[in-house]
Image 1 (cartoon, rainbow over the protein chains, first blue to last red):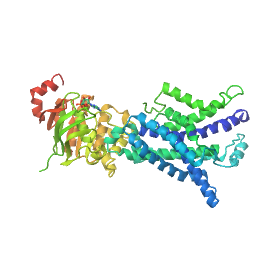
Image 2: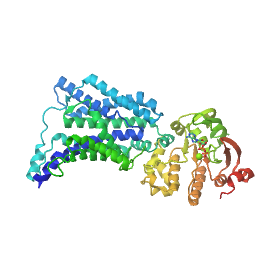
Image 3: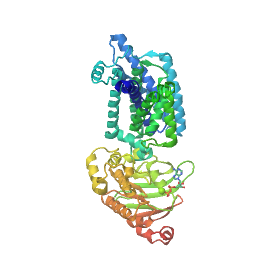
Length: 316
Length: 238
Ligand SMILES: Nc1ncnc2c1ncn2[C@@H]1O[C@H](COP(=O)(O)OP(=O)(O)O)[C@@H](O)[C@H]1O
Ligand SMILES: [Mg+2]
């Protein structure tokens, strides 16, 4: 039974789907927070993720060159998050803030321009070619393999996947604590609910906006680092390729609903991998080449049948 | 001894180019309930919003305890002690009742626990609902949340925009009773009402606005007795 069905399904479809879902989930959190609190679709979010990941790689490379120490990518993510947050705050201050009271479409277009500017800047600094993020083959975790083999349910899960899934769980728990139990987190939900009421309640909306960029920027960098750990490579187009599934996840979960975005990310990541499973016969149900179409299809269907998303977010 | 707490002094204001308020004068003295009545579109909500710094005041002045606060941004107006309950969308629907109150105390976060306790004493219905989303409450209960939220700071004056609109007579009575209780606790109130009879009955003084200008001013009883006003507002209504 396990060897006929479960082995292949779990190891080659379900776990990779979960891993991809975690990455989308963390990326979509930032999209949905910006959408809910600043009220615009931030096209540059993928570039923030990509830039942060380049910063992480650079930090690791510099430490390796100067001290010979190989840092775990999650360590390099810490200074990268700081860098990406500074970048996000500067962009907000000089490019988005002047549009605060302008029609939404203006700041959306500004973010589109920012997307192109940031990607070009990264290409100028680091070059347009692929970079190896992590070298060598990450073999399946031996202890897990031996134990599961002994009970006839062999799992081949590389360590990087444990890091990604475990890391995502920790980040989502931290996010939950922030939004439900801290003053600034509750204010973020309040502004997302009604910016006008927040203003006349005395909440300093600019402080909340900065908190949003900090949280969105940090989760974007984590998503980018997890993606680079998974694919073991870095590319300047990685953020752009993530944009569609991240938006699809945010819309699926309901705009302005961070935990909806997490759910949406998991669904889309799983869907993208599971559609390639040979559900009928021996061929993939849908050729893996069409994988990215899955997020698009889910997004279009949601926008038609339930634009407020599963957890009833905002509609525009 | 002291002058008015809040003074709207001859203001001209509007949202964009068009002027909506033409030389509006309203003041609130210590320990007073002041009612503002007038037909729909008269500019009552606009007059309150001008205090909050939500629109552009072209001439005239807003003063709090004699200090000019004309065109001060809303969060600073609230910090200075003016609490405001908007006419619509006056609670955070996705936040719990308690979280709404906590947000109300944003500008004054100290002593939160005692403040919450005071509010649950003033609005006993809210205690059992404290963990419920404000959006799931009835209209009357939402209004209570909105008022409690506004009272979480040490308000020098409370501005209420049509707190009883759309409520059942039972809730209307409760809200007016609460307004008297708030006044007795030392917070003066400026209240805009459609429900002119009950508002003037509760208020110490009142203003009638028509077409963005002052039309009548007087004590609650004087205005209630005025034939002109009776014809305009009190006629067919209960
Ligand atoms: N946000 C707004 N932008 C532009 N005009 C407005 C706005 N709100 C109200 N008005 C206009 O201002 C006038 C007064 O409205 P309002 O103050 O809401 O009246 P009231 O509260 O007395 O019913 C109306 O003519 C209304 O159309
Ligand atoms: Mg009104």
